[in-house]
Length: 102
Image 1 (cartoon, rainbow, N blue to C red):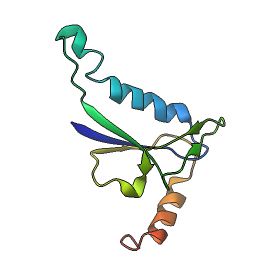
Image 2: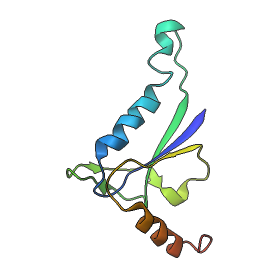
Image 3: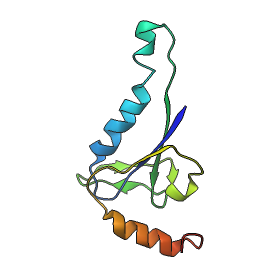
């Protein structure tokens, strides 16, 4: 199983986060039953925000993450969707708040 983390960012395109989430979820669960009869998920998807709190996207859509990004202990892939928060600013802020990264 491949662990995927999808970041929800303020003012970002919610569809740029939700569409990949659905694609990762469907991989193995939609096609496999058609050809082999048993679904086998390929990915475990976790959604995050910087602080674990709900995020309001650019169109005013509110999304609720599973946890904060700092609560992720392991991931194989991090998806940072287009648009929204300036990633460099977010990285600097998080590094300043994290004694391990600072």
